[in-house]
Length: 131
Image 1 (cartoon, rainbow, N blue to C red):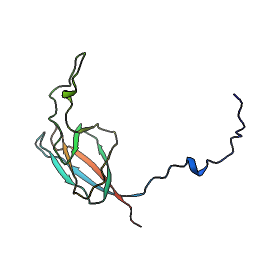
Image 2: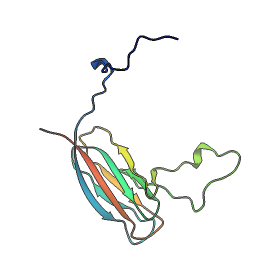
Image 3: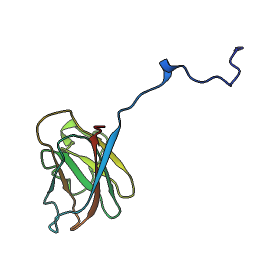
Image 4: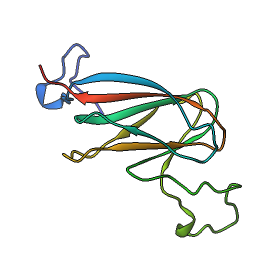
């Protein structure tokens, strides 16, 4: 199919996606030295999202509740029921994880836990930008 596009045009404003601006604030944390005991991080009031990073071990995370329980071994089989899912997301080492948060006036607490003691996790909260 032939087109008349010459490759030199700029996108129209209707095709531009605008994103809000955030102010990042960061906190290097060390999780509990007792495995599978949650560390609770109170997030600043205007937090819109959280970036998480770790170098050493898997970390489970959830909002306002403890994640898990963490299965002792991965679940396998030909059919895995929906009831096998546990509360929380999993932060994989050497992978940035973004966690989008609900817009609420209630205080938010990020719960972090691992099966390994004293895991270091970098937490960056993205605060609503106020000029």
